[in-house]
Length: 610
Image 1: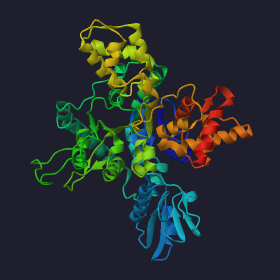
Image 2: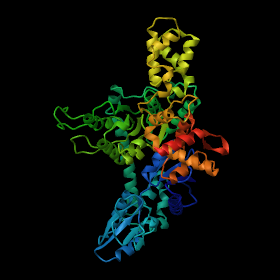
Image 3: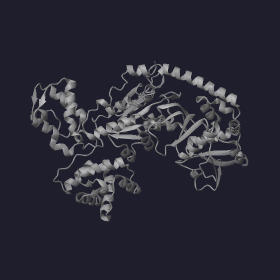
Image 4: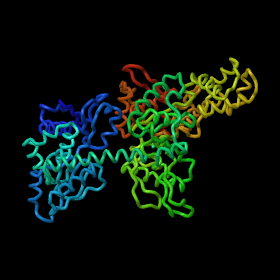
């Protein structure tokens, strides 16, 4: 008994494909299980063969398919009988072809054309399309619910089905080719669009494709350890750090490491948020080295450090003669060098909008064109990016493309500033001492001083600080010694980070703070970019308090969305933590949820007044 697993976006499609396979190959020789992305997937999938309904599904599966011998992408087509109604339409008719994506709509149109139907002009229509053509007739392959309500007539071709090539491909890989001689299979093949081959001819095509693919894979592997991997390694494009290099005793950081370790197994894009010096690239390198791409290049580029007019050619490369001074033969860009590996785009929020459009195209099409060139180069690159500013805030300010944001921010991590993980200061300080070979100790007064220092430069500042201490040449350092080597004083903690850098939790106010004018100005100065957001949160909590309603993070997230404020539970938790540190809310355990304080009521009223 052969075990086949079918995975589709929705369960309806998965069940349909599963039934077709069982019926054609025979329930006596195959067991078919079905899963869908809209439902929870098992942590591990074991099967002789896995059939995915579309290419994009593979990126959601991560290491779940580790124990699967064969993975195939479904090739789907239309049954010939579904086209009879189309043939009956008068010549010159116009209709919209409605499907789930633009690509699938165009693919369906091509299949209709391949069946010899040309007298009807079909226009692709799909969800999210900016302008729907004003046509009274819609044709759709089983996606009736996507048809615009303005359409008066719908011609439903019913669901598309698995092609002969897909069924034959499964049979070949599972050594079940004898099942293709069954009468049911031959009749099924004859009823499909483009069934101009017999079973024997079809098998020959499949075997030939298998042979060519094997040769192609071997050649590509040899061409890549020579033309790609070696030059990248020679240029230093490797990740040298792993999760073991991230030292912490902080529970939040420990959980963050475990989350990042799990994310590493996927192929999805990740945005890493954190203030300058918190270790964003350290996390990026660790993710790469824990991923299936660990043997391929890791290339890091700082989008803020390279002039805009040079960044494009650095990322995409250039062709010979693209501009004055261009290298003979051209130059490969970072996307080409990172093929099969990871490209880390630091300070992604500083990238020019025009260049963002080119990055979006790479993510969508998996291909690039060099500056000044006209040939298309296929690339397989995982994108990790980092920012010390919330990309969604930049989207709202029209400084970052919304479509690119949703392509990059599939997964996200937020690294806390060092002042929120003070228990790590002694651990990291001794680590830097060992690296530098520095021998000194600190007095209790010096340790107490460091325990109050806000570390605006985070771990990077701490490393620089230890190096400065190593040059003092004293075996024991007191409070005055360490204070002389720091850029700020502990008393400045409440004002740390006023430059707007990063999105970490703001420093707390003094305990004696009240809703005075200085408090309000301090709050608005620190959080000016999120003023409307915090006003919305405090407003909701104010009305909850008045009505006796208690909500946790999930309830607050849903209520805010109803008011047009789109925040996930994780984002709600982050912002509540900021408000809590200012004393504006209290976050309760259990059913009490989050409540606005008297101080929060006063601040909210003053924000409304302003």
